[in-house]
Structure formats: C-alpha cells, structure tokens
Length: 461
Image (cartoon, rainbow, N blue to C red; front, side, top):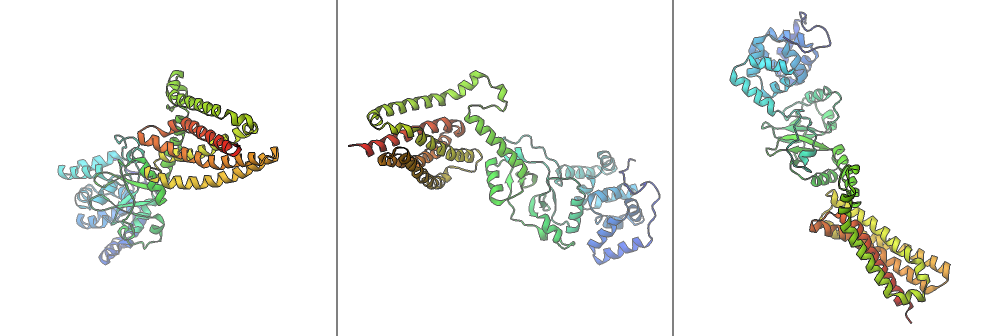
C-alpha cells in the first residue's frame, strides 16, 4: 500500500500516544465542543490519531472522523487506518467531508480505496468527486469567445456554508502559494453558490462560527455566457478584485480576477489601435501589402474625397483669403488644434465602446461633458490665439476672427469626434477603424468652413 509522505517520521512505525487522548476525545464530543475537538485532533500526528481511531468501534470512529480537519490532514489519517474502518467511514461518513478528503489523496490511493466498497457506494462517491467544486479546475473550453466562461480562471476557493471559521482558516493556510484567493465563496447543500466571505471578516470571526453566519448572500456574480463588456462594467462598478462565474445550475465554475480583466483591456486597446491603422491581425508581420491596402483603402478614399471638398471650399473663399493674406498664416493652427481636440474626444469614445464601458444610452451624457470641457478649452485657446495674432499683426479684426474661429472649432470637433464612433457602432461598422480617418477629414472640413465663414463675416465691407 502506497502511503502519503509525512514529515514527522516514518508513518509505518508503531505509533505511541497518550492513553488519555481517547478519553479526552470522547469527553469533548459529548460536550459538543466541535472546535476544541477538531483542534485537538489536528495537533496529533496522523499515524497517532489513526491508531486512536482504530481502537474505537467503527461507529464511534466514524463520528470522530468527521471532526478531523482540514481535508489534507484527514487524508493522512485515513491512509493509516485499518481497512475495515476505511470502508465503514467511506460508506457512512458525511459525503461532503469524504469527498474533500478523497480529493487530497493520490489518484491511485483514492481509486484503490473505492474498489474495496460496494459498487453502489463507490459510484455515489465517484459521481460526487466529479461534481465537487472545492478548488477544482474547470475546463473553460466550449464557452463562446468574449464571454465570462472564456476568460475565467478555473480555480476558486469555495467551502460549505456549514464549515467553521477555524477550519476554513486552516484550509486556506494549507493552500500554500495559491495566488487566486481573493474571496472565500460558500455553497449550500445543493452545491450552488450561496455567498461570499471576505478574508478579513473570516480572520476576525469567532472560531466556532460557521461560514453561513459570516457570508454575504447578496454577492455579485455572472453567468458563463455573460459578455466581457458586462463583466468589465460590474468589476469596475463594484470595485471587485474577482468576480464569481456560475453555470446554469447556479454552481460556481470559476472566477474572473482583476488581473485577467486588465490583460483583456490591454489586448483590446492594442487591437483598437491596430484597427485604426488598418491592421486586423495579431501578427503584424503576417499582413500582406495587398491585404493592408484592401482594409485601409475604403476609409482613405473617403478622406481623399473629403479633402477635395475642402479644396473646393477654399476656392470659394479665394477673394476673402487674397484680401487678408494673414488669414492663411493661422489656418494650420486653427485646423490643427481642432483636429487634436477631436482626437482626444474620439479616443475616449472608441475605447469605451470597444471595452463595453459605453453604449447608446451614454451618448448624450458623455457628449454634454465633452462639449462643456471643450467649450472651456476653445475659449482658452481662442483668447491665446487672438492675443498672438494681435501681437504679430496689430490687426483687431484678424485677432477677433481667429479667436472666434478657435473658440467655435474645438467644441465642434469634439461633437463630431464623439458622434461618429457611436454612429458606426450603430450601423454595425467597427468604430475603431472607421472613425479615425473619417473623423479627421470631417473635422477639417467643418473647421475650415467655419473659419472662412467667420473671416468672411468679420471682414465683409
């Protein structure tokens, strides 16, 4: 029989224990001192505790074994028991306790013990082992892309609501370097997610209190098919470090940690930037020149046509420009600043839509905020440009023209850059790849026209 290693000596050597231990165990059990009984048995070496239990009747030993925790310790004790007692415990002990213990045994040892049981009992335990959720790894394959199931980490710490705080702490301490324990989840008798308990509250709790007394049953959870944009919204809204993922039965199948989500945000941001450049493959070197041309050309043709329209607009105001040559001096400043302001606002919209943080219902609220901010920006840069124009040319009308144009163009650019991504999202086009060149072209067209109209109205006889 293969044994689990125990650091404190040879597990096959004849155990020696204080003769008063069996009496103490019976006394604590009669008094109902669950916590103290569990603590006492935890302090005993597995071989010694197994010898103590071996000396009891099967029925008595089974009652006491239910207080042997954590499962790792119970597994070591179990392996040292006599065979008849093992079979009795596997058959009559509480199912949840047995399953947790069997999971801590090597696979060969677990299967060897199950083979000694009646076929019906063995099948019941095997079925329970397959369904048990405590720190079990779940396969996320088969879930749709961009859903909670595809992103979740298959490890989550979940214990029964009936577990005592002291036992839960010992289980957590026995996990070692397990880096995904942000919260302790609880499950009910039906193996469904029941609540969540913060580790801080657990550490400060009465050792004999149960997780049912400590849990918060109003926890935030997501289904395996929940879209990632909704997952991101919930983690952001509730400031969570991790979010539990459940299946159709309401059973925990994993969790999404903030680390998982940050990686997704970074990947989405990278892809959005690549799409704006006309690159749609993760492998930059895999793009053929013809493929890049095919992706970019529709939007660049639109931009090309737009700039031809701008040229026609400039031609229509030739008389105004020729009479006030200094207007051309400030043309790049007014148009360039408008484009920069529009790019800032457009980036906010594109990023928010790509990550699911924004939708159609947010449009007017976000537009109002961006317009207000850009009215202030427009006024500030309008005053600065008007002062610079007067300093260079000492022409009050020229200063007034460029100042008004700058003040108006920046909010207009903001409105355009905010609206186009939402529009393209609405019609099913990708806002990241569509809004970049089109937004800049439209902003330049509106800005140029507005600048020339202000100049025409200011300098007309």
